[in-house]
Length: 601
Image (cartoon, rainbow, N blue to C red; front, side, top):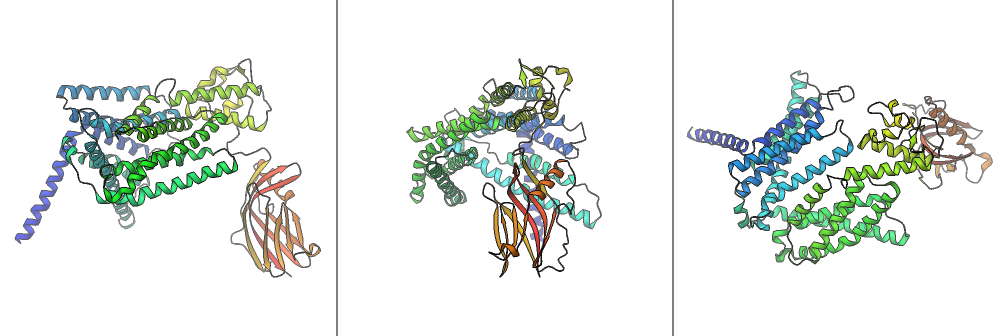
């Protein structure tokens, strides 16, 4: 009896301590939690809105963006105030300044939200989170050891919060599902999404804030190092970085041997490897000199040297892409990150005394500087694409004397596709009001025209970026299901993709019969005996299907079925999918998917 009372008191004390800790977190970070809960409220509402039909959905997006930015903004202000010992008056002024910044951002965000503004939003998010990481440890004589242990706490708290949030979401979701199935509750599907938003923004933020250390001065004397973190870095993260470095260097060797330009996609793995490598070195920074991990010291020594050839690789790749298609926000980001990566590699390679705080500080400065002014990502990309569009329009005589009109115009496929892509980009990222003054009759355009309408007013039709060429085709049809196979001896599933290779395959049906495709000729019969074989040219069938598809007609079973028969064989082919290109009267098949039934008489 006495033991149960003690256990009850312990549980009560634990709950009391938890409540006290929660209250202390509210008192310490009131605005951070207020903005986080506000973001959860807005997302709760957005989850219940049909974006295709509800006009009230999009005006909430600027509110959400402001609330999300406010979380790291007011967290950084509070941490700066604590680390520098600001007086109550100074902290109040800083908080008011933060509120004015949030209000100014909300008022200045253009509406409706375009892709360019979303890109700038993520620049601000990155900069503010980096400020949280280094703000309390810049100046005041605080050293790298305290900086590292402070960020270790943030990193581990974030990881633990993510784990707890995932478990809590799964548990509560299963509880809701049980209420639906066992108790007959009528719950909308959006409830699960709304639950996730509340857990991520309210619970997870609260949990994360409760673990932020208050006495930053004592972190400078901390010497402990988590064994799990060392094992993860030493045996998981660094080996993965080495694997990707080998792949990228093998790709560079392939480029040199084939003397071919690198693909633009290579920028993502290069930046990913660089970031992962730097993260690995940061994670083991306090124990880098220990004898038991001496090989990590060698890795650190040569890692930054290994980045220089990769920086050349990514520079050539992105330079080629920009020369062909101009600058966009994503390409601008790759260029800026490549330049930053070069500066960091030079710093850690040649400077004797290195400070790891340079990484977040410099990246934060880059994010802020490139978010404003004519050199910003959005402004620079917009200018580049507008200049490229104007050059194309003038070169193809779509724009004459600086004016566009709605007269139908016939130009080649590739320039027309290029113009379509740029107009769609400008619509999605910056708004087509940027080119309204180019039209002969701008009043014909509505306030926010679609890119299809904007092109029609140029006398052009929109071409999707996924359309390869004017003579290409892609057909999808339905094979009967279930499929009757009575009277047939064999069923074969054709699923071939040739890309730029000649279309051909050869498969044995039985010991004396071969099913083969050569170009567009399908053949069934004994090898070396064309007289006894069934043979058909697929060109007329696929040409007819292409015409039907272009007219928007349904591809009925009789049009997608091929039947052949002679005195030895019977063949029925049900076409499922095909794509390729017509060049005059000839057909180049690139993909063929079909079900073939064969009867041997």
